[in-house]
Image (cartoon, rainbow, N blue to C red; front, side, top):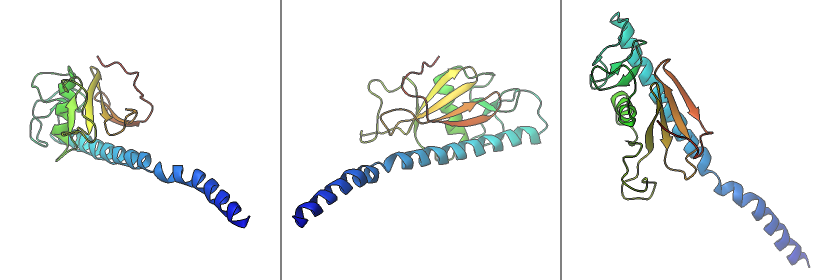
Length: 175
């Protein structure tokens, strides 16, 4: 009888404890996105400092930061690597900003460039983030290693603001 009671107690404990133990991957993914967002935000601030330091008050092409190919808007925030553009015009611009700011960054691909199903963790060539232009001033970098697509780094090139968003879900519509 005691043996049955012990088995029942172990069963109840395992039903409560095991799901919590196996759900540790979400906080780990959230930490990765938070760390990457912090690095991205710091790089943006450094690029902005370069713009301010040289006394700029207007949009500039090829500022002296990173690969020297970042362009900044009239507010001094990176918006592309294509000379002459003052706004974010495509998903590729978001991709260019990411790679122009970060040294050895996590992989990123522009929205729609996957040519089929988006690569996820476990595919031959996984992509860490999907670069998505939401409007002429905003890029979302959606984390690809979880199926819900609900972790992202959001960049506003008008203000230089970087936000971590965990409420995106699948219902977004890029422009």
